[in-house]
Image (tube, rainbow, N blue to C red; front, side, top):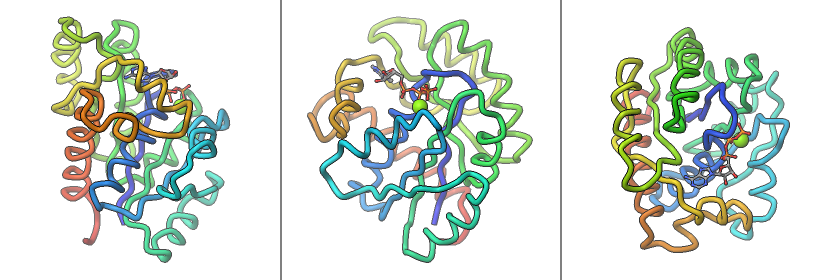
Length: 211
Ligand SMILES: Nc1ncnc2c1ncn2[C@@H]1O[C@H](COP(=O)(O)OP(=O)(O)OP(=O)(O)O)[C@@H](O)[C@H]1O
Ligand SMILES: [Mg+2]
């Protein structure tokens, strides 16, 4: 079983959106069974899942204090991939989720403010000795700012080779419990998610334990 944590100190970078999308896409690409875990008291991922009609991915209710035990149980149940969504700012929770992870995905908005906040989360992930990469989320299509952000981020670590752009279907999909790929499989958003998921699964294979 592999564990992907999605983390950033900053609020609203797209953690929950990407957690849902990567989980569903991984299931679609036969990397499942997939379980999602919402460690954020805001419960946004849980709310998305509760409005969802499809039975996959599985939603695992866990307490952060017992995260390792819960993960062992999921592994015993045959889960192959766990995606952990984390809250912004709650450092203890982010730390526990990083420690549990095989790989950490850090979504970043391409704004100066978000880029300045990057050092904090990088330090935490490095303290947990976990491999990680950034993914730029919410970039304006056809703008240069994402390219500049990639340059700035590359000084801190790897950047996923796909940028997720700002598109209304991402927001819409979260409201009705689906994903952009389920709403419109041929959309540019769906293609970005397919590429992102492929990359993340390859990183998990590279860094994860066992098969
Ligand atoms: N690529 C995108 N295009 C358009 N809207 C997006 C995109 N990514 C996220 N959003 C929207 O931005 C808002 C914040 O996204 P999300 O909830 O995923 O961020 P978060 O990092 O989980 O936030 P928090 O830190 O509060 O948990 C949501 O309304 C979401 O629908
Ligand atoms: Mg969230």
